[in-house]
Image (tube, each protein chain N blue to C red):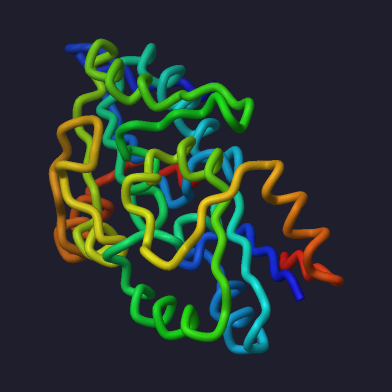
Amino acid sequence: MLHIVNKSPFQTSTLKTCLRMAQPGSAVLLIEDGVYGATQGTDIEAEMRQAGSSIKFYALQPDMDARGITGKLLDGVTLVDYGGFVDLTLQYSTAHSWL
Amino acid sequence: MSEQQATPSGPKVKKFMFVNRKAPYGTIYALESLEVVLITATFDQDVSLVFIDDGVYELVKGQQTKGIGIKNFSPSYRALDGYDVEKLYVDKASMAQRGLTEKDLLVPVEVLDAQAMGRLMAEQDVILSF
């Protein structure tokens, strides 16, 4: 399962809920304002690191660049471009694009 | 447009506060807020901009937006002092929650704790929230 989260973790509970439900071996792709969840030093960093032990995290680089936060990427999160985004949707049989 | 009360020295200047709580680009609120500020600046009122919660992200430096096909509007925050809009405040707790410091921001700001921010809000005549 590929989970796609586009909301800031500080604006809604979307990422928190997604992480509660994502199964080991699934992937979470952060896009748009969701990329703020992939930065260092936030108060959800511990939760992200914990989740990262069983889930693969990805972040869409153009969205991080736009927000000026690429330099703060949390280790363990892999950057992808739009091509990589497409590849992920092909790699995983189903996508849940959370709202 | 409502009429101003004329005083011997001219119309009353009102205190306007713009409350910004949304991250840029994901939604249109940050840009819309800035555009209203730029228009309001032409009316010579006493304007304060505050950035709370995800609004602090609006001021992060180094925004490179070419990849998402949206215009980078962050330089406009630096142009505000040319419009006599110089009072920019950020919420201390919001910065800490996001791992940000003043060094991450593209303009000088005053950092306020919640009590100070609340007192500033209480002084305002008009508050617009985005």
